[in-house]
Length: 185
Image (tube, rainbow, N blue to C red; front, side, top):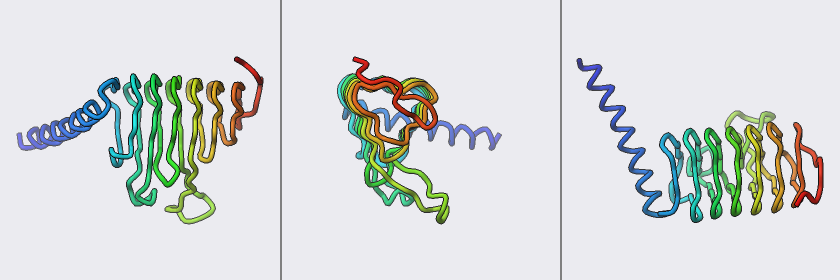
């Protein structure tokens, strides 16, 4: 019986903390639709959400504020943007992630403002700001690495790995991603 009470205490304690974060977000950003089962790690004051942003279930938002990211981080998501289910946005580190207006993000997308430096110590990271312009579409399971800027109106194909800047109004795809078509809009 003791184990059942311990489990319930842990479960409902986590549930209480989760709804506390949701309450803070809804109070700060009243037009945001954040579904259940969204995990938010780090300092909530490093989050800035525009109007009518949708963040769907299973998404992880890492806002930094921890030792591994030098206690820094920043995530900005512009108006009318949609983060589909099971996306991961790591905005930890000095640069963070800035997403423009009307961003359309497919499920399983990963956006990372940091990566581990595999040539050095396991605790060393490389940080680089990620900037995504307005009216950008990123299809399912694409990965965007640090130090990348994606121009307005660009489209990233599914399962692409974006390691370099993407010009405005271009379609990129592949691993690593390359420009497949320009002036698409």
